[in-house]
Structure formats: C-alpha cells, structure tokens
Length: 261
Image (cartoon, rainbow, N blue to C red; front, side, top):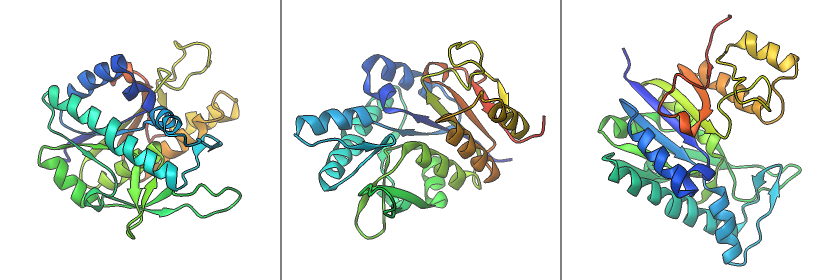
C-alpha cells in the first residue's frame, strides 16, 4: 500500500494576507502524513512591479512576462512569498524547504510558443522529476513550491500554479497515494454561485457531464475540473476543491473522483 501524500495548492491572496496565511500555516501543518504545498503570489508581484515602475500586462488572466517582469516574479514568488511561507511553517514545527521547479530540476518546462499572444517567459510543463521529489518528501522534508520552472537551458519560466500542482500530483502518483487539494475563494463547486451552501459534494464523470450540460458549471471552473479528471487518469486518487479555511477538514468541499455514479 502506498503512503498518502496530500498536495495543497493555495492562491496568492491566501498567502499574502497575514490573517489568512496564519490560519493556512496552522491547518496545513496539522495535515497528517506526507505533504507538499504549491503557492501563487500574483498580487504581490503586481504591487512590486508598480513600486519598481514596471507595467503589468494581463491577457485572459495570464501575466505577460517580459525580461523585467520575470525578474519581479522571481523575486516575489521564489523569494518574498516563498520564504515567508517557509519561515511560518518552520515556526509550526514543519521542516519546510522552499523551492522552484529549477531546484533539483524537479519541474522542466518549455517556453510557451507564440500564437495569437506572446506571453514572454511563460512555461508549459514538460516533465516532473517524480523520483527526486519523492525521495525529498520521504526524507521528511515538506517542499513549498513557487510557480517558477526552468527550460533546461538556464532560463526561468513563470508557470501557472494550478498547472504546477496538477503536474506535480501526476508525477508523484507512482510513488504515493496522492490527494490533490485546490483551495480557492468558494467552499467547493456550487450548484448556485450565489449560495455557498449549495456545494456539490462529489463529482464523477457522469455528474460532471450533467452539471456542464445544465449550465451549472461554466467559465473558469471548466478547466479546473478538466484538469482534475486528467489528474485522476494519471493515477491521482482524488481531487478536492474547497476553501482554504476548510483545510482542517478535508471531508468538506467538492471531491472529484473516478466512478460512474
């Protein structure tokens, strides 16, 4: 039987505010067994860029990463935000190690090709070194991974944190019983976006098809769920979509699983 590994992805908003960060660190530290954290930090990057007189350009919610912006996100994601989380976890008794995808070569990406938009130094994940990362986790270290990867040719690449969490989960599924948790602002997938009590507790492929056909699930939740099922196809046991404040009780939220019912 494989050991359980819980991979938690948290957005920048959660780790950038002292109150929510404190609660996250406490709840994450209390998760039993092996664990790993992937984080964002976009708001801090935008503020730092403004302080430095560097314009932030976004297209469809994605950050255009030119040379100047790459320096900013490297400082913020790999430094300010990442090390703040690591220091907080150490205070909670967790032996955390802050990393990017370049460290130990754990996540290799390729620069996104130019189509209708040139995103600059943005990476699409090609490979996760699951063996190296699994050895690190088994040694008792808790990796805290910033949303930066590398291309193998000396370039860092700004990389979507949701994608990094999903690809990391897939890369570690051969070594662990992986449970992937996406924390965002809602308590789960909702039947009524205006009613936080309308959480769909379990989504199988059949339920997903029904929710999509009825228009309950639309917009940004579609790629989240598509990615969830892609992770399940690659050996991840389940994907949980929930609020960060529910991290202490992973029975809550929406559980995306394989199955027909």
